[in-house]
Image (cartoon, rainbow, N blue to C red; front, side, top):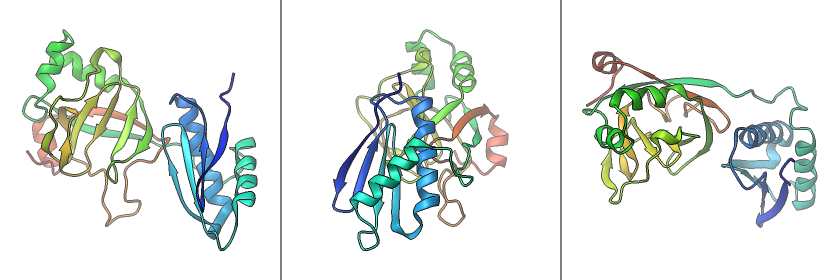
Length: 230
């Protein structure tokens, strides 16, 4: 049975669409397809779209439209999410990772707690094709799921004050790459030399909600050759 989709008022010029209660590949695809259709059809009536795990926030210009017209446009998009040639298919992005205890200070402890070798953790992390469920808490920080339960791990009891840019991390059933140096409480298992967010280029983010991500191991020298910093 398909989850019931609902549309609720989120503010004086915004509506939020709920696609279900639990994130999944199907829901992530529906969120992305609906966002693409609304972006293509609404033109300058639309101020912004904010997709998340199982919802889509629609912010519109109240001087050019209203709640009633927007509800109608959203219902039309939900009824036919692939009905526009402007819908963008999800992309598959492969990200290089230098896995090691040098680049991932939590890699050994995570492996020990899972009763696995470091090599097994690396292999399991690479074998999954992840879906981008949401982007936040910083520009370019993509929440990727679902992580194999064998290497799932809770957040650290005490977050680090500084996590380096490019840190590849695990928390619960999700994985992510830190787009910039910041505080963080995820388990660090490696480093990615590629920038997840660069405001000087277009598009500024490597991935969008609905995209798919795979990780591929590289050695230390390749990481440094690609511009990575240790």
